[in-house]
Length: 127
Image (cartoon, rainbow, N blue to C red; front, side, top):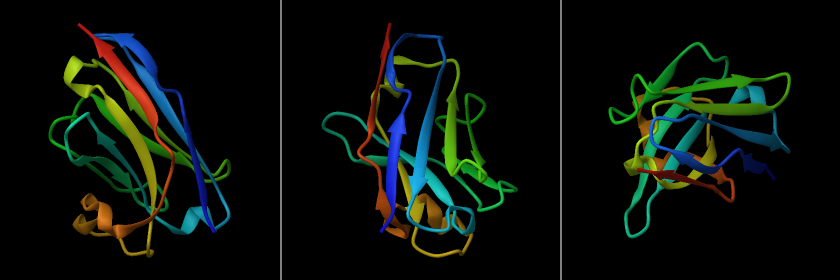
């Protein structure tokens, strides 16, 4: 069993920054890709970013490229999402997720490729 616990959400003004953290336990964290997704009220869950097991490769959604950065520290079993230049449309519940397999592919932009999910952390960006 894998447990993922997100933290770092909150209320921030447009143009501000937040860093989300996701602490993992229960499986060999360093072997698997990790991802961040978000879901705004009344909308579907959207992919935000993913990172390979060793941090060497990442994917990001077009809507966050140049503003958000995913990273990981395998020694701490933690994945991060640094969010800069936040916009009101970034308001959502943000979830981290652990991949089902060790495969690295564009399929990781699909939530179905993840086996474990955190409980989510709310990010609210005011205008």
